[in-house]
Every structure is written in structure tokens, then in C-alpha cells.
Figure 1 (spheres, rainbow over the protein chains, first blue to last red):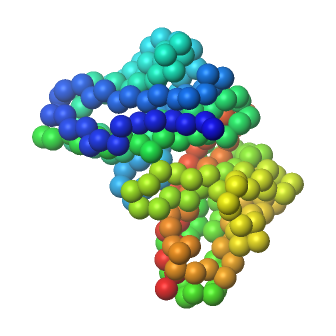
Figure 2: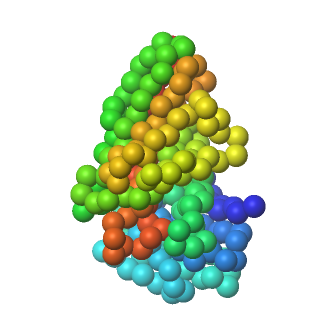
Amino acid sequence: QKEVEQNSGPLSVPEGAIASLNCTYSDRGSQSFFWYRQYSGKSPELIMSIYSNGDKEDGRFTAQLNKASQYVSLLIRDSQPSDSATYLCAVSISGYSTLTFGKGTMLLVSP
Amino acid sequence: GAVVSQHPSRVICKSGTSVKIECRSLDFQATTMFWYRQFPKQSLMLMATSNEGSKATYEQGVEKDKFLINHASLTLSTLTVTSAHPEDSSFYICSARGPSGSPTDTQYFGPGTRLTVL
């Protein structure tokens, strides 16, 4: 059974700090990895996708993937109170398969 | 690009009635759409995969006769909750596979529909 694990949090960081969100997955055949942000009462919003080992940067966000360790992370630099949300990690085995979501990590950024 | 809409955003109905939720891809064609359900403080649960022109594929434990899915065109999928009961109250969210040229496993989500059954 495919599983995606995330610490539920909340992860509390002060404004301006780096927030580090982690995710592990069980299926070694996983090929695609996504981070979604979900504000309370809203639907998920795609932040980043990553497919190869290493780092991928987009603005204040950096996704890191280590397939050998079955680990994917999201770093948020210069965290802002508006970043306070639940961050969902999602994994896919192939281009046409469904996504398996983790339960999400709640991030709280205090001013 | 890759905008997905849902209608209605919120619906309140009486127990025993049926409710239809529409999911549209506004600026791209989506051969595959997905329907999720999310209870408070829980993660997304995939209900079914909807393919244009064919029958939906339901996840284990999801009653296909209760949650009717129709994907009649490349931009529209509908979910009908039949004979709704209070336990069906939830946040229903659709997503669509991204437009041609984007990675095929990227999903873009609609804004969701909050269903309350009295």
C-alpha cells in the first residue's frame, strides 16, 4: 500500500525564518513529487513539482528530493505570516497514475 | 493558465435530496478529472477518476450508485450525490490533469464545494 507520511505539526516559525517541511514515501517506484499549499477552508494550490534528485528552487521555495532515502522536503525562506497554511506532499508513480497525498503539515508563521 | 472552476461553492440541502456539482477546466481541455472528498482536519481522499467519454473509476469503498460521475466533455465533469444524508456533508474538490505540454501527472484543483446535508 502506497503511503506518504508527514508530521502533522503545527510547525511554528517566526517571520523571516526558514521553514522546513518534510515528507517520506513508501513506494520506491514513485516518480513525481508535488507540494501543495492549502489554506483553511480552501482547496489545494500547487506550489512546486520535482522529478529528479537534488534541489529545485522557485522564488522563496526550494524542493529537495532524495529518492534513495525516499524523502522529499520543502524549504520556505523568509517565511511570512501569509505562508501559514497546511502543506500537502503528494506522490505519483507514473505520468498517468493518481496522486497519493500525505495528511499535511500545518505551518504557523508568527509576526 | 490551468484554471479549474467548481459550482456551486456552497450548498445546503435536505436529507434525501440529490445534489449536482460541476467541475470545469476553463482554459484547457482535461481528458481526466478527479473527485476528492475532505472531512474537517483530514487529508484529501480520492473518490474517483473521471475520464472523458468513459465510465468513472471509483476508489474502493466509494459507492458508485450514490456518487454519480459524468464526464461528458473535455471541459466538464459532474458529481451527483444522490439521496444525500448528513454523513455526506463534506468538502468536495475536483481536480484536472494539466493542459497539453505540462507534466501529465500534475493536478490543478478547483475551489471546492462545501456540502451540508440537514
